Image: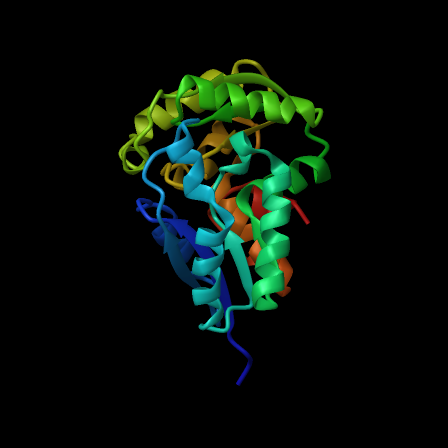
Length: 242
């Protein structure tokens, strides 16, 4: 019997979106399953109490639990590097692999790899976040030569509430951003139920939409050598980005 592939996903404790969506994305891949480990995250802001949620030791404890399941890859399915800095995710991946012996990636590092690979420098940003968090994300990408040409955000802080954002709100935000003609749009939050809308929005707008739940899945599959073209119905990312 062929070896089963286990994808390990690190999950914010108050997230109700990424687990079912991750499992749905890989449902058509024989022998591939997703496994999750949570650590405490309840709000997204620039306050110390919120940034402290992403302390490496808390995340590493969750990663070590995933290692008990002999997962083949560990991905931080979260976007905190957007406002805390990309270097933090690079270091986190290094420490996860050092602690567990398992290769690691993150939603944000995967997104950045996709943007680089596809030559995207002008992008649109859709999030549920607060004003200052959104500004920090835009500034962070700007320091790495990515220009955010349009953005929409909802001013929310409680992580659980992000999952309650409606399809209508997400569609409206992405459509508004598309008017600025970005090379790509990212729905940037793994507790935002955007991934199921990507296929229809790309067909309507003619612009690739990279969701951060999907980017973590895409990179995890690539690390373990699974053909991402076999993931169907979740947007151009899986069909077109190699």
